[in-house]
Length: 229
Image (cartoon, rainbow, N blue to C red):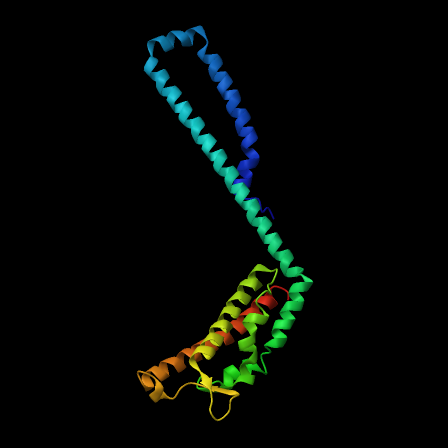
């Protein structure tokens, strides 16, 4: 099966086109220098001017086509190189990326710990700090970590931002419970300036941030798996 594109066929034919053009130009010049043609030129100068203008326009058009073909070929080569590099990264991820990815999944397993708590038990009203320890510690512990693979790094950066946003919400909107200093809770509805409505808004924001963490966790694992980690 021939996978050669029209651009590649045109580029391969360009040398022949140029040689043929030079030969035609030489023949045309030879014709112009003959005595009979010189006499005709003297009688029809406007036709010669029109012909010269047409020839110049043709040469400019051919030059533009050649330049455009070369640009397309360069872009095609760059695109193919990028595809090859991406494939190599997926087939041969760095050992550091593999270790970091497994560490991330180990700290946030999908079937236990923080993730299951946020998914099934988090009410955004009251929570034990031990249940969200990884959320609060994550931004500092993982601050300098990064993946060599670009796509995995993008997913990880988003996940880290989601966790940091949830941790900031927990730290700024809740206070230690008087009943248990290890438990944090939102102020009672009557303690908000706008009462229960503001309490519900704050709680709803906490639930949305927790859901973003869950989605981010799923996304970073999905991307990492697709990248060979």
